[in-house]
Amino acid sequence: AVRVGRRVAQLVAASTARFECVYASPWPRASQTAEIAARELDLGSVKIKPYLHEVVPVVDPTRVDFGALPLGLERTSPEEREIAHDQVEKVRGRFFKPAGRTSTLVLLFTHGNLIRYLVSRTLRLPYEAWAMMDIAHCGLTELRVYSSGFEALISFNETGHLPPSMITTA
Image 1 (tube, rainbow, N blue to C red):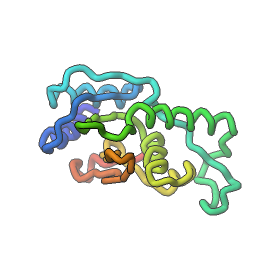
Image 2: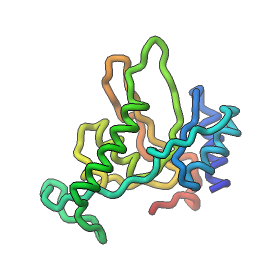
Image 3: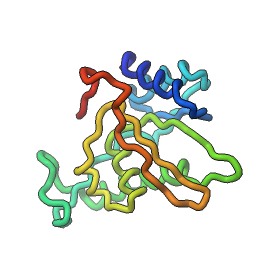
């Protein structure tokens, strides 16, 4: 995590973007990487948010438009789906607000399923679309909310900052 965290921090630091804050999941692999990035970017402390933790895969076999179940996964109960939905909406409510007079750039260090669900919601797809999105560890995804409220996927799972030997998936 330390080596990859430093590479992510160097890439972000080299960009012209100026981030105002770093938020992270409480899970060690995300919070440790965020700490390294915050230190490298001189952004102060990382704000740990429990709602940035990983989310259960949402699987609904009745959605024939998404084909067969992903290998090894069972159907998600309605209760689990509701928990996942509530978590995604909490993240969106906190971070997906139209820019006011000035835009805000924040860095979120979180996990694959949550990122896929945020992308799905931005693209107005059902949560089940996650299964068609491969995502690497330490990939960078940029979602933008314009002042009009329009949301766009700018980049997904960018791994160009990592050498091939460091690109891994779950």
